[in-house]
Image (cartoon, rainbow, N blue to C red):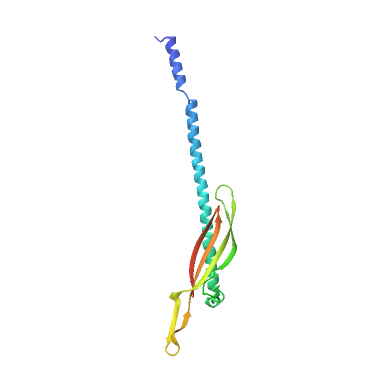
Length: 174
């Protein structure tokens, strides 16, 4: 026969085994909090990477547009007098400031507009691979040099956060 005392003890044991204790709930909340902070940090890093990549893609577009524009003008428009040669024969880059690119995007829940201002330096130089020399006994050695192509080095820079990012793209105009 079961006594009243045994039933009371079984009821107390059953009551102790139901549900979660406050300690388990606090530990679960702390673990979820750490996981939430890790996911938030991951999303912030992903957003910064996306913005950095988008800025670099815009710089590549700006550099390629400049090379294509100068290429469409032709080699004759890039004579040494026009491209920034000084008296000593040093190349002075052509500087173009504040080329603006804007993107509509959604890196996250909120739609954002990203605007980046680029600065470009274009250095045009005769390329030794694209130079022909003609020599004559009457006119002297290496008397005529003809450049039939020039090298373009376009350095595009832009600000991202607290640093200056830059890329360099090279091309040849024939």
